[in-house]
Image (cartoon, rainbow, N blue to C red; front, side, top):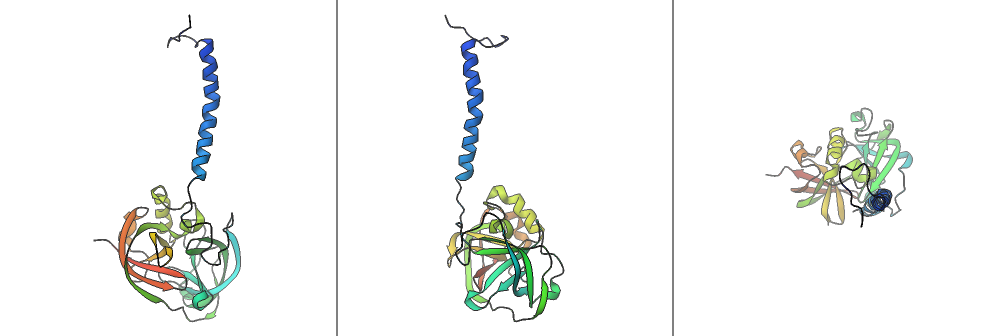
Length: 245
């Protein structure tokens, strides 16, 4: 006759003790394996390629010594490297969840040199500065091309994590982090549900050409449909979104 285990007994019977030992050893290993599978399963929506050049993304940010270009401040600090159709526009940020260091107002429209780390994903690239840019002299800001008015469905994210500061850097679980980044002055990015003119990542600006409208803050990290005009700046698209309603 088999033993039975009574809840108030001091210890379970021998055959049940063996089963419980195997379960105690195997269950953590099963959970660890499941966690690894779930962690590796999500796919990067932008794909592991730079927005320009098609080079594979590095495992760590790449140092960019002495990047030279024209600095503009609207809708956010941007560094325009190169000219014409080959121009590459870099979003600028500081360390952590902060705007670029120093007073950039005196550098608006100036040719500057800057050093930092490069983050890149999809259609956007960001230079994370460790020190303020250095002025090299006056320059002509790049021209912008109007692309009309659009209604776009997607998600409001911060440009740093969306540009590969974190993976995936989007989704409702990232909402609090994105809100802190945007409050700290990190440029806003709109990740479109479907590519717009070949671009899934758009710089998100306000209707007046400045930063994202403050009325959109409650919508960070959520799927939303917004309307507004779109501009092309080199290889970057800028979405001047209006608050809904």
